[in-house]
Structure formats: structure tokens, C-alpha cells
Length: 255
Image (cartoon, rainbow, N blue to C red; front, top):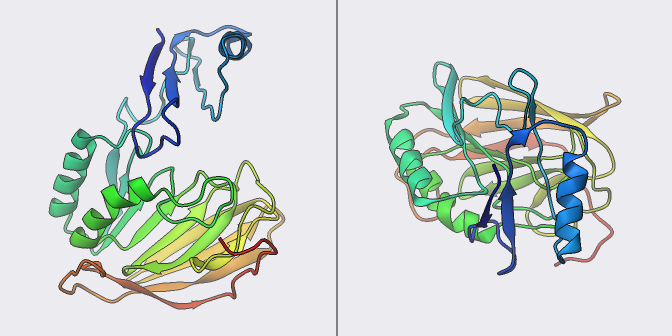
């Protein structure tokens, strides 16, 4: 069954952006039929995600999250991940996030979601509306690290208000040469596919970013300082980058 909704301000770029959600019996030609229908009526697909469930033979069915749009998981003592739906950042989800952050009790609080609050990407750039919604909550509750995608490259952002931000969006798709020179970039890589390995030991998070050929393009450590009194410009559990490789200097002009 299809449904159509206008995107929230967090992800909408124009007043005419909509999200089409479709669930129907799976069969060949669905994508072609949907895209043809939209184009014939003056529409255009800016981004698409499609899923198939072979057990129920359904198309566009969410998977692996038991129908939940956002959730939290604790893989080890002292570490908790918060998975958010940045496409529909509504009041219900924000209230859930506030409650989960307040009761977490973990030293390491790591949030991950699709759209980056900070980015040097030419195609999308920073989602400032999402930043306005989430950053004050992260600062108040002591979030340490934020992992995002959306931009199809790798970028390590200089810590913002004591929070480390990483964009890891080039594992399956690459947007080559898309990083522009800004003051945000601690390290950027947009000329190859990458994946990221992270290990947390006590108050230190070690990271290594590798290409699909095994070359290391970034590595280092962020150190969790410990709990302090939060301010509007500093999270209550700030991290500092104690070491990392040099930043890329893109050829494109500063924005």
C-alpha cells in the first residue's frame, strides 16, 4: 500500500519535496513502473531506498529493526549506541531520545543516523536544521561521537562542542571529488571506497579508515575527557582528538 508525505524540515530542501512509501507484493518491474509514473507527471526521484522480504514476498518492507524507526543497543559495559531516523525527526522521536539519553548511564554515548549535521560535501553539505534539533540534546546529555552517511565520501570533522563527528558514506557508493575546502575538515577522502573500524578501550576510541584495497587513509584516537558541567558550547562528556592523520586539501574553493 503506497503513502505519500511531505518531508520534515530536517531533510526538505524545497517546498515540493515528498517521500513516497510503497509496500506491495514483490514482482519484477516495480521500480520501473513507479519511476515511470512519477516522471510522466513531472516528478523526479532524488534518492531511493528499496528492500525486499523473501519470506513474505513483500517489496519495500523494513528489515532487521522489528519495525522500529529508532532504537538503542548496548554492545558492552559503558558503551551505548543510539540509532536515529534523521529523515522523520518528529517530536515523538526527540522525546524518546531525551528519555533514552537521560537514563543511559553509559560513559560512551554514540549516535548514528543518515544525514550529517556537519559536512563539507558539495552535493548536500551540513544539515543545519537537524543540527538545531539534535546538537543541544547531545551537548546536554554528553554524547561523545556521531556517525553519519548521506555524503558518499569519508570525512572526519573537527570536534564540535566536544563531540567527534564522522561521515562514513563511501562503502557502497562513491561521489568522487565532492569534498570542498571548509574549516570543518580534519581529514577527508573522496577518491575511493572506504570502511571504518572502531575499537573502544576505556576512555579512548581508536579508529582506522581503509579503502577497498586495504590502504589506510585515516587513523587515530579520540579521548573521552570525563564528565564535566555542560555549557551551550561544550558537551558534558567531551572528547579530544589526541592524534590523527593530516587533512586532505581539496582543489575546490572554500565555501
